[in-house]
Each structure stands twice: as structure tokens, then as C-alpha cells.
Image (cartoon, rainbow, N blue to C red):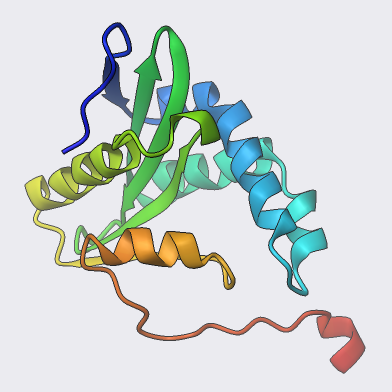
Length: 166
């Protein structure tokens, strides 16, 4: 159990798509971290924008009936972490879509608390199949999610340049 130093309590706010606009700078930090992980897709990852990512979440909710939970973690009036979790239209599949805690706040249990909140929401909605996608090479994330019962099941491979192999 991690305790917070005096005066540095962490508070959490939950909501839906209306909170997405608040996570832009943290999502960008996560994207930049992923772009630095060695691999053939670094340039593609670096080219992603927050607007494109939020458009996907919003479209999946509006057009495909997915449910969306955004949890925000705040410490001393600063946003220090977030988690976006979704449930598909069938209600049976849930995904931890994006989770990030700023570097200076890691080791305080914030990521654990965000995960527990996401899993509780999936429990409350009777979601039977849960997943998270982890970038190849991000061993720290694999270990983190393993603590919550997630394990690799398959490896999805993507063609680096489809036009070059047509």
C-alpha cells in the first residue's frame, strides 16, 4: 500500500467523453514515449495526433454504441494521470485503451488506483472479456498489467509498408 506525503493527496474524477479534452498533454507524453521505443513503427506512432485519437474514441461511442470511461488523477491541482476504458456495443468486451501517469508521480500507486477503477467499472458492467494492448518492447507495461491478471494471448503483426509488398 502506497501512502501519499502530507499535502499531496491524489483525487480522482470519473466521467465520459466530456473529459477527453483534459488529457491531451498527458496523451502526447505517452505517444512520445511510445515513439521512442525502438521498432519499425516509431515514425507512424510519432505522427499520431491527439485530435485523431479522440475522434476515434468519440466515433466508436457515437456511431458504434461503445461506452467510455475517463478517469483523471489530480495531485495539487495538477493532472498527473488518466485512464480511458471502453466497453463495446455488445457489453461483453472491455478494453483499457490508454493509461498514463506522469514520470514524477510514478511509484505512488496512482497507476494501480486508475487500473482498479477501470476494472471496477468493467465489473459493474458485467464485462466478461477484458484486454489491453501493449507496445512491443514496453516491458514495464507488460509487468504492470500482469499484476492485474493480464497476460499475452496473441501477437498481432502489422505490415510495415503495405505498398512496398503489394
